[in-house]
Length: 225
Image (cartoon, rainbow, N blue to C red; front, side):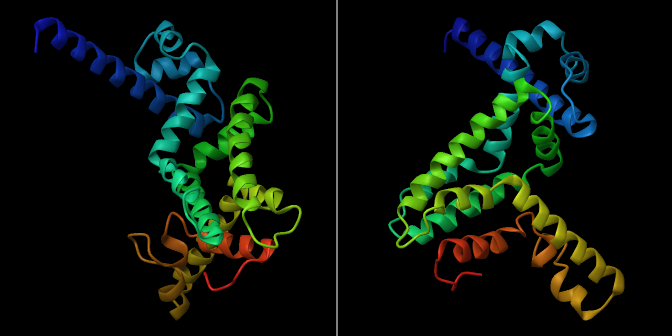
């Protein structure tokens, strides 16, 4: 490797590290405050405000990067598999599972981000664009289902929304906490294990419930949990 190539590679690594640090700072700031202040994010990442603008161009660009980071961590790359499965119900199940893993990555940050989207037009456009992609995917998969209701695409879109998973996760956590506090046999069976097993302990505890809801709403078989 030539000295020039080495220096270029080192410089790119430094840029990537700075970019990742800014994204992490934005996630933490958003989760803590419910807002996005570029000045605050810059201070938290220990960079100049100009660096944030240079890297992302705007607040919307920074939030796009935050969403991309959440998607990468949440395994959204696996979503493509849903569209390759021959069985249409297996494809829908996979769609639900991948969305569940994605929504579980950082529920506080995602909750704050989506709440902010209702108040800030710039943030709203970022989230609306992401939701539009999910709506398109839901329409494709729903269109493959045999004897599905006319509103199957809309139902699949709504049932795979963050708000659906978040509410079900919260219920599972509350149930687990109650069971653990009472020290009953239910606590052993329902609360789950520290490593994420059971109904209330796993990061995707809501996914089986969403699969059941989707299958019931769209007229699917009921053999899945």
